[in-house]
Image (cartoon, rainbow over all chains, first blue to last red; front, side):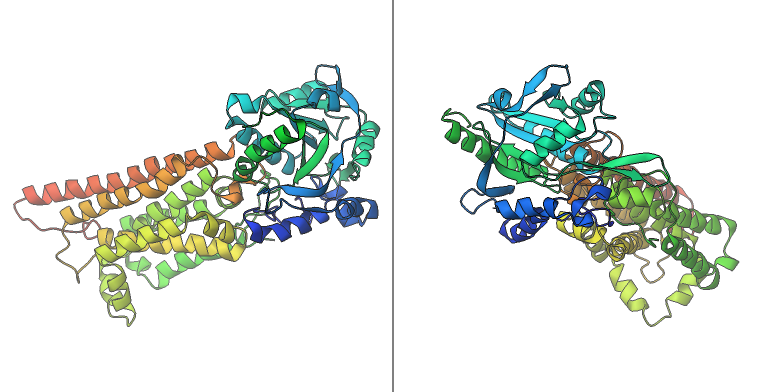
Length: 250
Length: 270
């Protein structure tokens, strides 16, 4: 399964380098319903609700001014308040917990064979390169879209493979889909894998960068590389410092 | 069905996958040996050499090594390189009977081969191929298609044949290329191959989108995989080239200390 769906197309659509690649990135994100578990790919199913939001909200590649390789939202989106349960069983109020920090919000599942582990591994590797003081300003929040299989222990073990600081959130799928809907994103869709008795979960593949004021400002679709993160993280920290007035952010 | 291994962007599975193009390629090499390269009149040793060369190519190109190397792990890609460019070519060349080379030399295209296999030309050409075929943008562009992946594999094989030709092929047209010089030739090659090794092993970031963005296989991260690829190139490639240089040294030493100082290539030695 690829980001482009289960059509066998390799997920190499975003070698996000330089301005030449950016229109392609924007086009990819405009068809944003894509995600792991191509069977649930809403672009495949033609679900208009899945296709509209990204296009409607006007996402474009990181502006020439920002120099981002991620996709900068023309109009940042405010994250509505939501509280899910973390891997230790405690309630996790996203806006409270990440206030003032640069947060990366990602919806995925631990059985995902392709996009999720690559996205998390590349982000973790890039964060690992940051100086400790800067790394402390970043929160990574992973929300499972497969609560039937992803127990708190499984999610914790999974995230620990990437970074022990990553936060995992678990909630009934209806609650998770409500959060996705509040962000104008398509719901996670469970799809049976024919002949195996197994299933996969279609979900959005991008990591959303949320500044400490609770605004989603950039999105990082599948295909973002460590070099892209290395380019963007310092700028994101500066942006976060600017919007929160913390004066930090290197 | 795929005919040649290439990056697919789909999750890896240990389910066997057929690659008919690889079988056809390997079959053609075997057929060429029997009907064109004197396989039927070759000694047992030469036949074994050629057969092992073909077998190594088959291992490198077919599932699972070929599939893993073309789309999932840079380290396995490097194993492919060692097999296709450094291991199989000398065995294939040594498998051809000496008398067959005389026939081949009469072919109209042979002057081109002769020029390409001049030691300095072959050394530079091989290393140019090594550098080009490890250039990230080129690798990423080629590995995503079967034709591109085939072209890269073929470039390695041709480059390997060019590299090893002056060392192991009988060179009646070049009698003044003694064993000592051949030894030096291989040692210089190990030095030149340091460049991609350093590039891979000490690079801070993954260079190849193909492997960085590939669905993971096992727990190896993209950076560790790339470093492992560099080490495989250094240790594996160095071992092959230095072992060959050692054999040449032994042949040279034996020739120097024998009553009749006839210098032979390994393939002429029976």
